[in-house]
Each structure stands twice: as C-alpha cells, then as structure tokens.
Amino acid sequence: MTKNYRIGLIVPSSNTTMETEIPAMLQARKNTEETFTFHSSRMRMMHVNKEELAKMDKDSDRCAVELSDARCDVIAYACLVAIMSQGSNYHCLSESRLTEIARKESPETSVISSAGALIEGIHTLGAKKVSIITPYMKPLTEMVADYIEESGIKVMDSISLEVSDNLEVGRLDPMNLVNIVKDLDVSDADAVVLSACVQMPSLPAIQKVEDMLGKPVISAATSTVYQILKSLHLNPVVPNAGKLLSGSPVLS
Image (cartoon, rainbow, N blue to C red; front, side, top):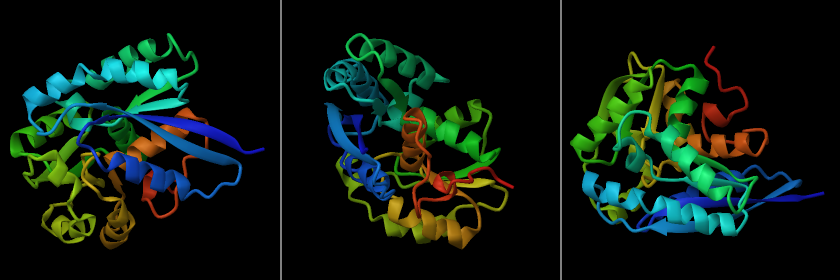
C-alpha cells in the first residue's frame, strides 16, 4: 500500500528554492510505496540582514500553527541563517518551541530546521573540518561560520558571494558553483558545504562537485532532506545528491 507523507515547509516569503529542491530530491527516490505532498507557510523577508531575519523569525510560530492545521507529518523550518544569526545552539530552542506549538493541534508532527540539519549532516558524515560557500554578505557568513564552529566543527575556508537580495539569491545559477568551488581552499577539509543557504540553488552541482573534489559535498537542502527522511523513519537515500544521501554517509 502506498503511503502519503505531508511535508510542511516554513519559508521566507521570498524563498523560491526549497519548494523546488526538496520535492525534486524526494520525488527522485521513485519508491512506489511512498508519495509526498508539500505545504508551505511563509514569513515576510526580502533582504538578508540580521534585523530583518530576527523580525521574520518571530513569524515562525504562526507558520507552525498553520501547518499543524494540515496535519503535516514533518515540518521543516527552511531558513538556515535566520536561526544561525540568533546565537549559539538556537536551532535546538527553535525546534523545541515549534514542536510544542505544532503538537497542540497535530500530536504526531515532527519539526526540524535546516540549520540543525546542516550541523547534524556534517556530524553524520563524521567530518571535523569543512569549507563553505554562502550567498551572504561577509558579516553574515562569519556568523554562520561561528555557529558551525560552536557546534564542534572547524571551518577551514569560506566564500561569500555577497548577494543581499533574497530573490536574486534564488536566481543564482547552481552550475556556477562548479567553478566557484575551485577558489575555495578544501585541502584540509573533510567535507564541503556547497551551499550554506537553503535559498541558494545547488542540487544540480552537488554530485558533480563531489566527484570532482573526491570529498563529500553537502548543502543545507540535502541535509534537510536527510533529516526529513530520518524523522519519517524512511531510508535516507536520494540518487545523485551526494554522500550524505548515498546510503553510506559515514567517512571511511
């Protein structure tokens, strides 16, 4: 019997990527025993700066309520920097708060965040050192790097593309990352975060860059899908989406 899973997404109002990359990965599984539907609630945000992110984050509670009304099986808070800009370990506080809110109406709903998923994804790989690419202005990239390091992971190098308009971030060509990553120092990195932002498209380049570098390559989006599948007690495997979703994610 085919089972349908309802995936809830809490996204910034200007986000155009999570509703494309997450469905693309889950539908690529081509498992006849499962189907997925996707349901979004939006928080107003146009420019990626600390003030607007903090204001937007307050709307996540409302979004969790709205998605719980749809009885989503899992809700993903899909804005990494909104959480990481709030200070160390904030993803744990956010996930706990939103879970409590959602379960008032939908007791079985799980809540994850892309920020927490990226940290867990790196730990799942067994990586201790990473190099990262972000679309952010440099001060926000530094906040993301600090957050990752406070989670016990060393950031060896970073590239900031410095695109402040969130709509423009979503329009970036993911295949440009194949060349951009050549300027990233990955010599001492255990893994590469090709997009430390759920709005910056990267899925078409993930496997290509991983094959090119010979190192695991993940993104905020692939990490989010890994955690979605784990929370649904499904085998976390997606073809051509990098080592984390390969079925054997641990580094040898």
